[in-house]
Length: 194
Image (cartoon, rainbow, N blue to C red):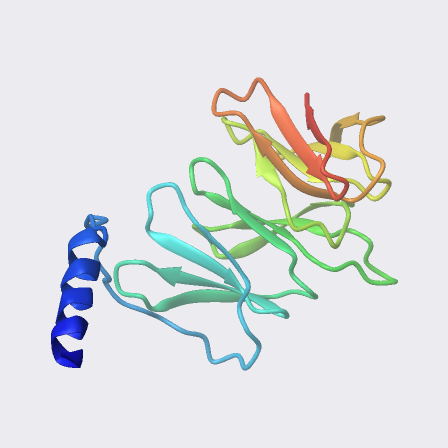
């Protein structure tokens, strides 16, 4: 009697339970790479033609070839907080920790030459977000005073400052695809469209 009751309950549950199905994502695992650094990697970016991965590991940035998954080059930096490739993939913007003697935190790497360019700028050295405009001529970064600074990439000079909206730390920033708009958000949950 107990067995029959159990089978009836099992059959009832099976019939009324929703059918679970999975839809394939179309994504396939292709391989992995890793760093010899004992520090965890927490910041990553991929260039527009998907040939290079940039990964930050506290005190350095590593560039990896996506085809071979081999290390291409590394750059030493103090406390990397943000990475972003330019739209054409030729430059990598790095926001790093400032020091007592070097206040500039925003630097550019020429990806083709594997060199750090001499131009740099002072931004919020803890900012986790930086953004390129659509043609790669301007980088938007949270400034030291809580504003958003726009830097010309040709010489990293300050083009303009967007201010007066955010009263707390800026946590996200991005350009629209056409480059006409910038959206920024802060810790308080306020989003601004510029």
